[in-house]
Amino acid sequence: MTMRLYYAPGTCAVACWIALEWAKADFEPVRANYASEEFRRINPLAMVPALDIGGSKAMTQADAILGYIAGRYPEARLGPDEGLLAGFEFSETLAFLTGDFHPAFWPFFTPERFTLDNSKPALDQVRMAAHARIDRVMTHLDSLIGDGVHLYRDRRSVADAYAYIMARWTAKLPKTWNDYPNVARFFAHIERDPVVQNVLQSAAKERS
Ligand SMILES: N[C@@H](CCC(=O)N[C@@H](CS)C(=O)NCC(=O)O)C(=O)O
Figure 1: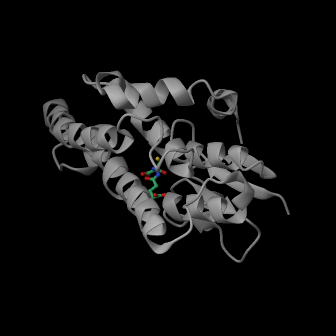
Figure 2: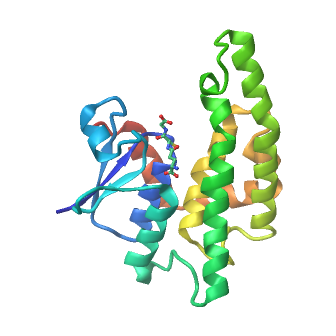
């Protein structure tokens, strides 16, 4: 069967879409309907990404999926270099992105999950409280990029796709990606990639 990537526009799943395109994989993007019973059977957590490669259950968790894509298509060179330390550095980068970077945004986008008071002032407080944590992870991302244009060593990897899609979320914050000089340089570089542009456009308009 053709692999199916379940995604929603603007989410971390779009990073997996970019990685699959970079790998020249044969796959079908499918817009997930979070509320549907069908999607809950695919991922009981009702979250994207999910990658169905035809096994007994779909693959979930972005870092695991990105690692799978990198490993399945070695010729695309999207994964770690050879060696224990190179592999560690790669896992450390992905763990930061999925375990620290992404969750820093949760209170900003879904404040109602972090307070029992659903009044507007309470929700605004939660959103504002997220700013400091987001600044912290953006500052760390900026230092990981350093004076280059990639996250992992000096070349493109699945980590670039993930960091790019996630850091775009700061467009809704008072301090955006453009306020972090290394991240801004990284954005200028990755946005010149026509594959990335095509995925962003397709992901914004695809329907299930
Ligand atoms: N740990 C999961 C988190 C995935 C996740 O939070 N996905 C978001 C989109 S970026 C989602 O599906 N959110 C729906 C929800 O929280 O209900 C992963 O890394 O794949």
